[in-house]
Length: 185
Image (tube, rainbow, N blue to C red; front, side, top):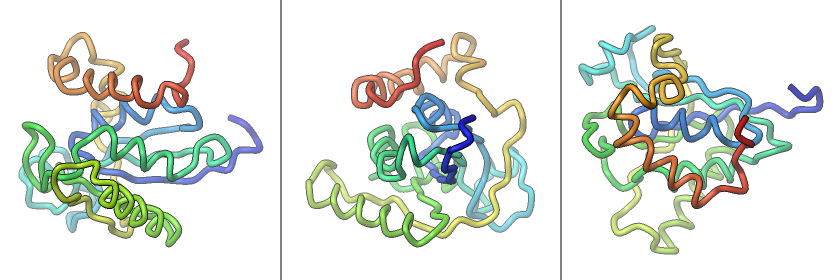
C-alpha cells in the first residue's frame, strides 16, 4: 500500500453484499472491501439472524479507499449505477429490509455528498421512479462470516447466483466505468 495514501471508509448497502463487494473490489483506489451488517439493533448478528429480517440490519459493504486515487462522489456514482435505488427493501429476487438501498455516512461531508447525488439524479430524471435510498449515519459494522468474504471471486463458476445476478452488474461496471477498473492480474 502507498505510504502517501489518504484512506477513508465508505459504507453502502445495495442488496446482496456479494454483488456490492464484487463491484467495488475492482475499482482503482479501493484498498479493501468487507461484507457485513449495519443499521440494526442486534449485537453481533449472524447471517441466519439477518435472513430472518427482524434485526434491522442491511447487508452492506465497508469500503476502504484511497481518496487520492478515487473520490467519494465517484464511489456514489458507481453505487447508483450498479443497483436499483428505486425499489424499497428489495433488489431483484432478494426481498426484505436487509436488502434495502442505503448509504451509511461516516461524516457530514459524506452525508451532504450523498444527498446532493440523489438530488442531482432526481433532477436529471435518470430513473423511472423515486429514489428510495436511505442516508443514515454509520453505526457499528459487523463483519459477515468468512465464507461471505470475496464471494464472487471464489464462487463465480460454482454458483449460478453469481452468473445470473452478479455477472450483469459486472458488465455494467465494465461498460460505464472501464477507466476506473484495476488492471487484470
